Amino acid sequence: MNHKLSVPQRKTHRVGVFVDVQNMYHSAKHLHGARVNFKELLSIATAGRDLIRAVAYVVKSDTEEERAFFDALEKSGFELKMKDLQVFAGGMKKADWDVGLAIDAISLSRQLDVVVVVSGDGDFEPLVNYLKHQGLIVEAVAFRRSTSSRLVDAVHNFIDLDETAALMRSRRVAARGRRGARAEHSEREASEPRAIGTDTDGLDDTIS
Image 1 (cartoon, one colour):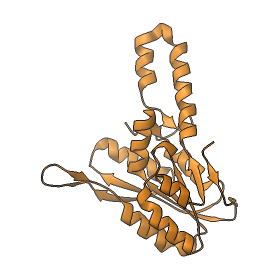
Image 2 (cartoon, rainbow, N blue to C red; image 1 turned 180 degrees about the vertical axis):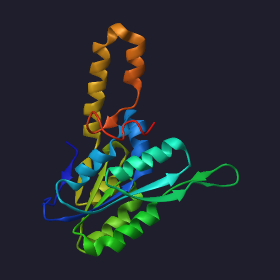
Image 3 (cartoon, rainbow, N blue to C red; image 1 turned 180 degrees about the horizontal axis):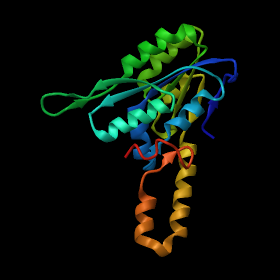
């Protein structure tokens, strides 16, 4: 098990969850060919504690599919913060929320006992160290294989989503074998990305 729990998670703790959506989406897609079940993700990050704020940081590209996804995020309990995708001369694209997420976490820290950063990005290490210095418990939730070791070392607690993803993946492979007689249809169905978390959820059809 790749979880790290050096500080107890108490139900009385006030929790703020800050989600780097791009990081989660691309990690799930590249590592597991899967979709993130953000409703289940929020449940994992909160861990039965007192949720004060849950903020998801997204980048807009103005598509119908994207709008449906954003609606589903809000219905799952997230406050959305959006910014436009920046396209520079020469075609280079930039879209990150690192500074914005850090500012919000610091601004809200006086209302919280625990800050949960849902990202594997090592650039959040200075934020983690600052919040720890202020007396907060800091946790990260991410896929261990795509998470910076510096971030894992810095946080008090780390929750590895790879284990949940592996479970969903094994179910998908087993289901494919059972439907072997319907090869073409079954292979197409089984190869579609699935949600990480529960088998069914409101977000499963909103991300491709």
